[in-house]
Length: 183
Image (cartoon, rainbow, N blue to C red; front, side):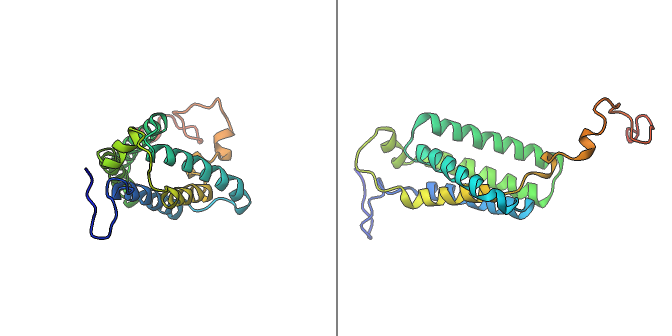
């Protein structure tokens, strides 16, 4: 049996607050990354944004409707992000890594809370008559669009130094001093 609130919203069929918070946490993550990394060239935005919107919206719809393949791929993505942010924080504790780690923990908690909701159980059972997902999928589209604007990670951007001498000794600095910095 479901309860109806004072405003007349059936909480068993309304998209749970944990799903909304989960969606907005990804918007916050994209905004943090945009502030940290900056935007890519505006010439690359249209195609990248279109791809991001399509991909994120497709997977978000699958998570919201409890479609197992898409749901578990997102679970794995959140878990890998959590481990990666933990390693990044342990390796170089900065404000950015602390914020990213906190956001990853929050996303894992919100995803777990969502899976414990009545909505998720109804979606798993494929009960007909669910509410429209358009509002929350617009948030997912915003996440994809912001992802399309993001610039490349600096450490992933190839530089000329990476290609100068592929056969050089990795334990020698360019001046020829062996084992520099290993004291």
